[in-house]
Length: 491
Image 1 (cartoon, rainbow, N blue to C red):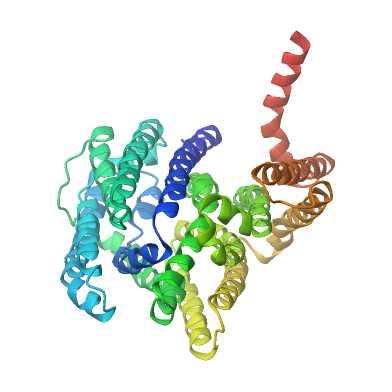
Image 2: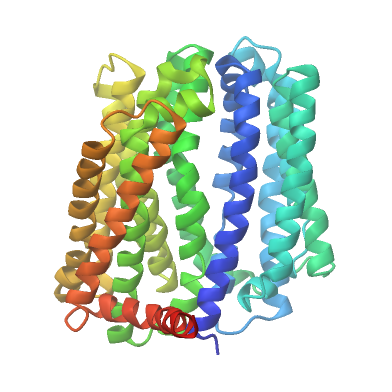
């Protein structure tokens, strides 16, 4: 049986992988953004919009289905692999055939070869080893972590080399292609398992996936309606700025938050039939996520202009307001990730479908009725509507699967994070009134996060006997505290 310790180790390895890959990615982004133009990014963003579309509409939730099972078998794994190959492989071929009309629609012949390469990338990705899911299920992530980090260094170096030598948007395209190839090869090294076509377990998997597929399609439109609207309304440079700022704003979520919450589905599957313990563990997860997201959102919003100038260069500064706006999208992504895992754990994917319908229709109405004066205003409306939608989804999920009695216990520990980060940021500005250099940025960020950590620690210690997540946090801290005391005693 998986233990809390194995869950913590798995989370740590996941975070390590994502942090390393993202740190390498940030370095490459700094270089690429200073070589390439917003228009280059806009051109590739249009092509990626179609790649993401076929990826999302063919998402069966197969890995989530397998991870939520108490035991795995080869037939379960082979069926999942076969289903993915048929759906995603067919759509990759269809995308390749659509490359010419897409280029014609946007009146840009450069799109056709880009889409053809991305189609090949999508097809190749489906040929990976089915055996990786066994490693993930057992939370044996050490080898996966090493290979992913190594491949990231190699492919990033090649990508930067192409950009420096040729100064072309093809660096972005070929970089993604090489990442896919390296992941394919590493999968067979880490968990060699020859793919086998099998549909023996298709019925139960399809019962799970038949609501995930339409929900995935709706999710795509829910998350990409704004990008689609921007591509047909604004010039390519604005498209590049919009998509880039949204991507950069999502980096902290993909680097820290999603990896940390990734093993949740595996951990929760052990306790889904124990409502009391499930509620307590959910409180812990929400509290930890608030501890991570609060400083990320505040610092990204407060220092967007200087961060963009420092990292990307002066030509991107005009889009920095978008980064400040998209910082709040961290709330949406974090809650979506946690709530979706809970719903899939309970095998109630129909609820996810309903949520996607509501949020997609709401956005469609907004884009059809609101006259956006600028791309910044569009971003503000988009983020505000998404926060409202995920808030309603939170209420429904907690009411259905945990109980209305749990609302206060789950939400109350989150409120102090908002208050303490605001107070910490205000005090930091009293010490460093202006952030106009790397040193002042680093100083202000350290003061803000330091004060935030101190205030949260004071709250945890004062209420540790009253709030479960605070009690749990203190227990996690005790071994490190005792070790420090022993070290001090030795000295």
